[in-house]
Image 1 (cartoon, rainbow, N blue to C red):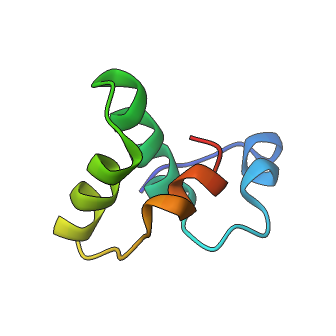
Image 2 (spheres, rainbow, N blue to C red; image 1 turned 180 degrees about the vertical axis):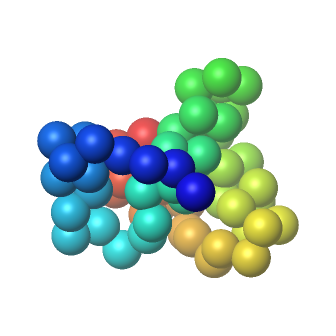
Length: 60
């Protein structure tokens, strides 16, 4: 489990998904220059159903 400082955890307040999943998706998107649809497929393989439009809304 990822431990976030209180100032960082406030960034994720009111988000639908756990901060760890958001950071994982952001990391993939930036590190491997993936499209939102690619991130959607990777998250689906891990059991998290997210629409590519939702990735955009998460400000990836």
